[in-house]
Length: 253
Image (cartoon, rainbow, N blue to C red; front, side, top):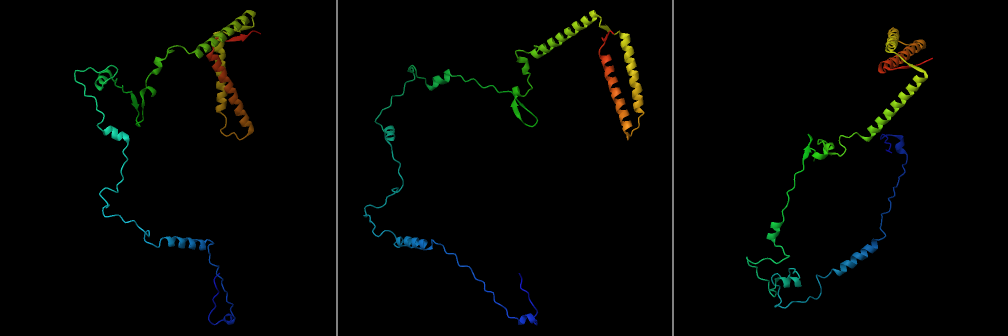
């Protein structure tokens, strides 16, 4: 907090001021101070002299010679045995001598061994510089080399058999119903007439749908619009059914 300073002529300057004494904290002293001093003095006592007190002086004949202080490698017995002349090597064979059996010389090895050069692997490099083997790139028609190439897969054969079985069951059912007189076949003229009536009804609903207001602000308008959409959708499904199937059976009441 900053001290308040009054002008030189002020009543507050006549008041006695109390001196505030700040007490400094005691200086930190390590507990190992005396131990460190004793160790330092002990180490200095050993280093007062310049070298050992008594030194063995060499005689004048034993002076330092050249390469005397260089480190020398220890020579093993193998070194002496290899470089010594105690063992005499066999003489060089003549040009007419035949090599002993079971031993191949360098010249025979070169004649007998023939290295087959490696064939370069076909590779493929794309526009970004990525390199890969042509066999794994998908550009080679590997499927031509398959054992089952050109054969119909088993799942397709099974699917066709199931489809044929269902068709046979349906035909047998229709045949039984015909024999019992429960169903009758719709003629082509009846189918065309019914299809024309369905399309005519759809045109009427579509014309009515086009005349609806753009804003459906009431519940009745919204319900009428949804009703027309559902009726048109049902008519579209019926038209697709009559156009897709040429043979239609009706129940005989």
